Amino acid sequence: MDNRLIVALDIFEEKKALEIAKNISDMVFAIKINWPLILGSGIDIVTKLSRFTRVICDLKIADIPNTNSLITKKVREKGAYAVIAHAFVGEDSLKAVVDSAGGAKVLAVVAMSHPGASDFMEKNVDDLVAVALKSGADGFIAPGNNPSMIRRVRERSMNKPIVSPGIGAQGGNAVEAVMNGTDYVIVGRSVYESAHPEDVVGDLNWQISEGLERRPGKYEILNL
Image (cartoon, rainbow, N blue to C red; front, side, top):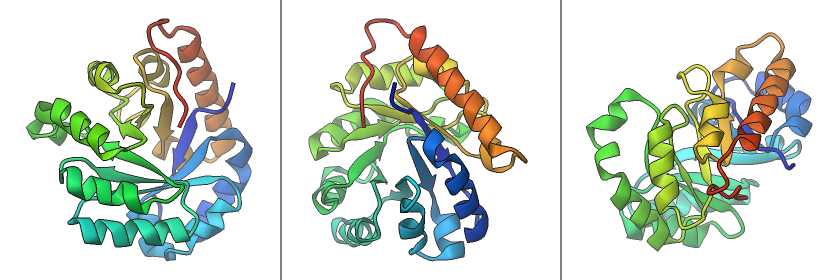
């Protein structure tokens, strides 16, 4: 089975990020980085991490089409495997990301893992999934700590993969998320705050395998 774990390095320190990436590179599908690491280390961290494994740039791109295009082109030039963008900005802005991504994948955020997501996003998830599909996004971001939301997105996903944060520190369980339709699991704090990240990654991979074994047959395992 190909790997299904994505480790989020939501830290500032380049040295720590590179060390963790080097040590777990053969145990994960990808490393996900957010604004903290780019602000702390510079945009070239994308290229440096890409030497070890795939890099997903989680910039939550959410602007007008031209700005979205500029951001996407830059991270693509630096070697990003995928970018994450918001669907709520509308079809034209998300499509600008897709059109500028070149060979990089585009993951659309249609629901989030924090409590405030219930204020707006959860009420509009069906429309956000529709926008993502019309825009040509390659997959969806949906919360791993909300199994019912995973199922809802999965039912509307048109066989595009779901990638889920919210596992571990935010209360989600990898086994449960995968059983309910998640195709890739994102974990951050549980890994990078550990004194032994490799052990945590090993355990998470076991949990994902367990979830896949228990996954209902109606949920095909999808690749990103």
